[in-house]
View 1 (cartoon, helix red, strand yellow):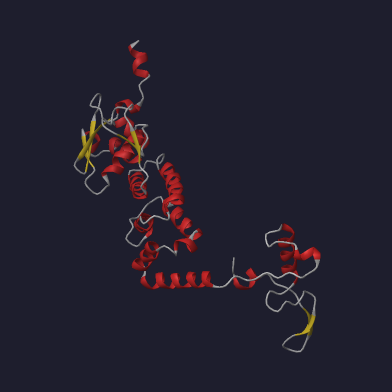
View 2: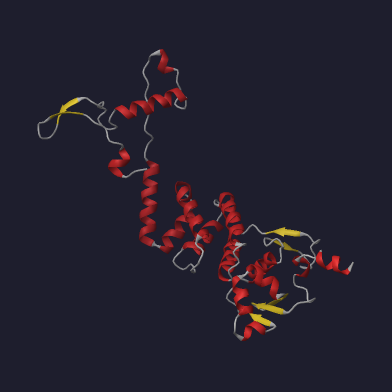
Length: 279
């Protein structure tokens, strides 16, 4: 019976408990009772520390210093012990029946990803990345968004071996730039980091968005005048027309003309993207 009871215990039941603990992890004035085999299984950093030739391998205490966000380190170790890293238990952190409170702070996820990158916890980084991407979709209008992006991707951001979080942030901002550029905090962020580039980008995007829309016209034939601008038949007609007419002079393909050298030729259309590189 005793063997079955022990085998049914998960790693989470040993989180921050002194029972069978063989190492204390200290960080920013805090400490957690841990187990070398549990830490080494998910963290390449701890695996190397405990299996190397340095004194730390046999030490009963590791001090990570004060550089890391303590909440992020705690979250990382919770993940290593198969506990929800983003759901901080209220009260006794070793009691899995206690109430949860989920962290919805972008800066928290940046700190956790940074810790998982530094201590090489490869199973945690994809989880943080997914949560961060979801949070950007719902928090980009808030004032904290610009602060988080600046911390992650600005010139003062730290170096990450795994740049997937930075790439995700850059991709999101590029996709939503015309909306973000209307947010004062976002504009201030890019101008503070790169004054000239920030102002240039802001002016360019604002200028583009301020241009009047290109109007659609339709003739008075019954087959045309009833079509709305979102009607599939109308849009299909627009696309077909655009394939056969120059967007500037409206000449149709194969129309005869004299070129600049006086040579008699026929109009041929080149896709706009091949001329300008536009998307």
